[in-house]
Amino acid sequence: MSVFPKGFLWGGAIAANQAEGAWQADGKGPSISDVTPHGLGGEIDKKPIPGKYYPNHEAIDFYHRYQGDLQYMQEMGFNCFRTSIAWSRIFPNGEEAEPNEAGLKYYDDLFATIHKLGMEPVVTISHYETPLALHDKYGGWTDRHMIDLYEKYCRVLFKRYGNIVHYWMTFNEMNNTHTIPFAAAAIDVTGDVDHKTQQMYQAEHNMYVANAKAVRLAKQLMPDAHMGIMLSLSQAAVYPATPAPKDVFGAMQLQRRTFISADVQLRGEYPGYAKRIFKEHHFELEMGPDDLQLIHDNPSEYLGFSYYRSSTYADGTPIYGDTGGVVGRPNPYLKSTDWGWQIDPLGLRWICNLVQDRYNCPMFIVENGLGMKDKVEADGSIHDPERADYLKQHVQAIGEAIKDGCNIMGYTWWGPIDIVSAGTGQMSKRYGFVYVDRDDEGHGSLARSKKDSFETYKQIIASNGECVFEQGK
Ligand code: BG6
Image (cartoon, rainbow, N blue to C red; front, side, top):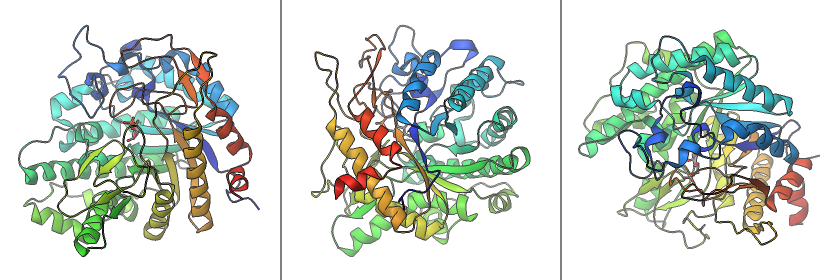
């Protein structure tokens, strides 16, 4: 009997802002990703500066080339494909009375193509691409106006795509509000630690309410849809750096900064430890009278998550973060990527087991991948055994987690085609099985070509994951 269940979802994931380009096409308004010349971890301009290079503005031009790109995905055997809807294609300023028909039409065609090629679309409603106008006017998710605007956006999406899209996630990596707040919550945190902490938890609270409203709306408009949350669980894959009790306890507290989002949205209530966090930072959350009931009555069904790496926590060592999770003291037992991300497939199995034990709900690994430099040989071939190894080791870890009893719905590799890095804006940080000829300055023909790892993933999917175990025997 095969380890991976029949109907397991195999595919890849991208985000609109990192792939589509066409940043002003067909009435699209600017999003928060359109003002970051070096990714969401770098400088942020107030508005796009004419003549300045912004990698997301053209990205890989998926907007005009998705037909061909999706054929590569079909050839690898994908039965699902995850992407996001760019909110500012639908509501360019976030609060127009009527949605932008041209933007809606684009996603009609995109989802129809995904289906025609034998894949289920898996859709993130908000993936680091809040309309810039909402950041400018309201300061992002610390303001409750965002809740109604998001609900209005969801209503349009569910009515329009409810028949064709069955897998949804409300917010990409909401817990990254604590490491990249502009990306995850469209906020600029200011002031002392207490004030910053308050802003981040307040933004998350407002997103919890928006998530609950989206779940409630989905029940009315598309009862068969699967509604998930999406978190970065690299943020939770934190080991104590030593057996010192302060390291062990501190690692657990860092995990809770992530698990709070799942505790609230999957279990339907704030955990006890939240009160202590708020008290120690001297604030109370602003809540509407019905917020807690709404959250309680509308939990999400599954936990989608990204996992790239693990990290360590040592008491007293400053903790930073980026798109891949938290950065603590280097773990001497693990190798690192060119970008310093520590490779840890067993950490993925560990995280799956933690999720199973804590929530006992379906989980969907919607991002995992290796960002590295690729070399194009004179004959055009690209040999990337490191990427193929990373893939095999992580698929094997998922298989082991399934054998442990974890309820895993699917796996989507991050960036099956090279796209712009969210954290750095680089093209040279490549995740793809399909290469895109474009460099960090925006030069290149945008031509696509297969890397060696393309075949590896194709074989894995064709064998429903079995070949990774055979090779290990
Ligand atoms: C996740 C994001 O945090 O990490 C993606 O959801 C992002 O948008 C991915 O691309 C990898 O990060 P980076 O910075 O290497 O692109």
